[in-house]
Image (cartoon, rainbow, N blue to C red):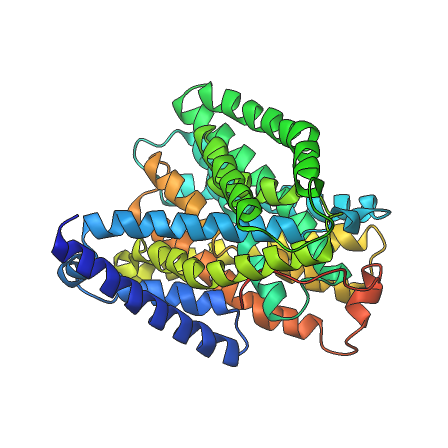
Length: 422
């Protein structure tokens, strides 16, 4: 990079941090998750509001590539923190409840999305897009859940370490894994069977982490210390493992967030409290600075200028399918397993957020030629609107006694803190 590009990079980082954190704080004040403000910051800095010339002058290609690398680093560390905080024991004794939620949150919206795909083939055909792959992708696009955003919402609402939050996180993680596997299948339908082999590699890799790497991590963390604080060497090993795991899943054709999340998930839970507290504190400080860069970089890729007023009805149809499928499917799945109405509605509202995973999936669809610019923009608007809906819907479902959601979800005391930044 030239000296001018380095100066521009630093100026862009300062602008991103100030605007993203400022709008994130404003979003929190009006009852929205902070991530909504951070995504809006990206849109404000992108071609939707600014002219193409001004946006490219502020964020030239060379600077954008560096920002994208910083953004991915923040995302990987954030997902490691989320995986570290997920208590897999939250599903113990509630397997049927979780299964009902997973089926309702995946199969119901997917089926409705496939129906939407057949309708779009008639009213908005995409030239050169294989019909079978298109309808499957339409089902996938409306059935995803943004696991990282869901985690941020839970943290902002003080629900991250509650039983309801643990169940929602565990269900969302499984739904997210299913989404990436389904995306690999779509890639196979478009570009050959190699993607299916990559999906199989991911399953084998996850088994390797749990069966081999996790015992080694336990021995490493317990060796040579007696519950002491985190050392620089130990922290470096954990960060290196996170990044290498992200690289591994990215190389398999899955998204890097799954590798980072899995590495956090396999972290032994029996370490000393001082060690765990240090890991959480350091990760929280890093992600508080790096993660907003990701949301702004994602917003820079969104151009809503191609939307037309005549597309409003189609957007309404997409919204109706997405919300009815995800919220209705999750709620019915939980209710059929005996969960009370209030926590069922709360988890259903949480599953409806798509603000991070959605744009990633849609970007792949655009690259594969399954979406054109207009349909891509409509789908992006859907992901943003459903994310905006999550906060008010969650507040509505939780109105009443503060302990009712926890009781309905199988109450137990929170077990730890979180490294997820506010």
